[in-house]
Each structure stands twice: as C-alpha cells, then as structure tokens.
Image (cartoon, rainbow, N blue to C red):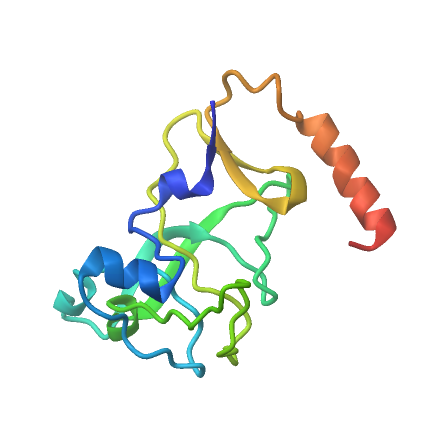
Length: 161
C-alpha cells in the first residue's frame, strides 16, 4: 500500500492561519519572518527540562528544503533538534487567496514535521515530482518501480532539474 508521508506525522499540520484558528479556537501566534515557517506544534515541548527538544525522525532536508536521498536514492529520516519554545508553537505566514505568501520568510524552508518510526516493511520513496511517499511493499504494481524511478532520476539529471 502506498501512503503519503503525512501518514507518519506525529502532530497535526495547519496549512493556513485560518485552519489553525478554526481547529484551535484561537488565533495563531504572529508570524515571525526571521524564523522558518512551521505549521505544526508539540504541546508537550514546553514541559521539557532542557532548552532543546530532539525528535528522532523527520524527513532529511537539504539547505534548499528539498528532501535528501540516501545512497540508494531514497529519502530518509533523521533526528530534528529544535528550541523547546519554537517546537511548542507554529509560525504560519499569512497567505492570500492565490496561495502566495505576502509575508516572505527570510529562512529557506519549512521545518519538517516529526514522524513516527517506520514500521517493519515500510520504506520511503520519491514519487513523481519528488514527493516523498511511504510504502509497505504491497500492492505497488500501479506505481513506478525502482527501475522506473532510476530512469526518471537519470532523465532529471540529464535535464539539470
């Protein structure tokens, strides 16, 4: 079975400030463009006795914000370290109806959402467009296989994308 990466998320994700307000019943904290965009929060983070919180699994990202690939060409999870106060809140910019962000963040990418550990048999792979997906290895005949993905990666490299 193929699932989106979001099936591994430990925390809910809020796409907009309006989503946050609707679900939480209160306005999202003011956006801080000096901090990265962060659309999730950990209510337990402030209870930590340490200044930082370590999450064991989050999608590994390059400085550009794109998911990194391991030696076999698949995305992978790595630890994520955040200041406990930042982990405990969202940092969602205002978005207009076109989906653009009028408040441009000064940092490069959105903070990844902590994930649960992969279950036995589960693995991550890049789907079309570089989207990270999760598979348990069953019923994947309708999706690209490893050879197809390798061919697409070779084409993308040739095209410089």
